[in-house]
Figure 1 (cartoon, rainbow, N blue to C red):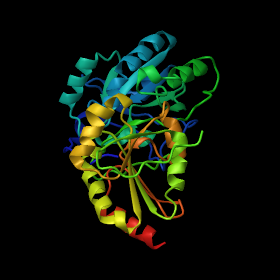
Figure 2: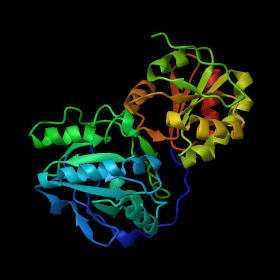
Figure 3: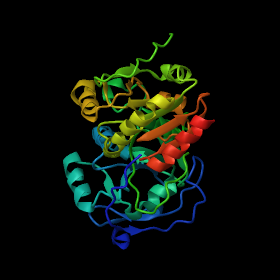
Length: 355
């Protein structure tokens, strides 16, 4: 989802990785190849050194507000399970977050577990990690047994299922995780320049007409299909974004311009924010007004992000920004997980108009 504002890298400073070449990211049930990363204090951590223990690997971001919203919960899990032969390791794979920033974030967060730096996002690529926070659980033999989120909502007041804790309890009891592969929702990992992003793994109210006041309508996951149905006969362009997502904010003017250019040509542009409801008035509406957005603007009213992902595109990792283009018949014809390439999107849009 993210704009490629990447810093230069020093490849050999923190990373020493010993992994076999993977044709695709790891999936649940596969053994995880050994790797070694240095933490922010310079200590090397080899995966094989933790054999005999369960290992929770959490990909985190120093600047990601979603990741930071989970600090207390991650610390709590690490503390609650440390006496059950469970090791918690945090990994920062963001190319635009230098060691100094990671150290500063760790000091504020008071992490009770080690934070490792994945220079060149090699380990993130190995796991197929896409967002922060995103969790992976390895059993005592080094086999991947759980992948996904920490719980069902970044807002702790809306959490209905503590997925990571449930999975750990089941695995420690000798069972398989009942929900072993879930989508994580958060900030997209900023990969190094040139690196390849792993392959992914009641009657609804009629949507409002485009407004010029920047007003926002709540949209439940169950209403998404009706939004598509109401667009039949038009090409539907949907952008998922958030005010806390820097690349989303950076690319937003492109959608304003596309809407201006194509609104009268049979294209319906819709923006769906994943901000919290409490951010509508102080953040979302002011941003939309500043951008002079005249297309329909919604805010996802989903207690569980997985519900939204399932109805939009099950291949979507949950990373932002995410753009989807549906043709006049409601068929998904173009997706972009990450910041858009304007020419690529316009080419797809023109093709959809002609179909």
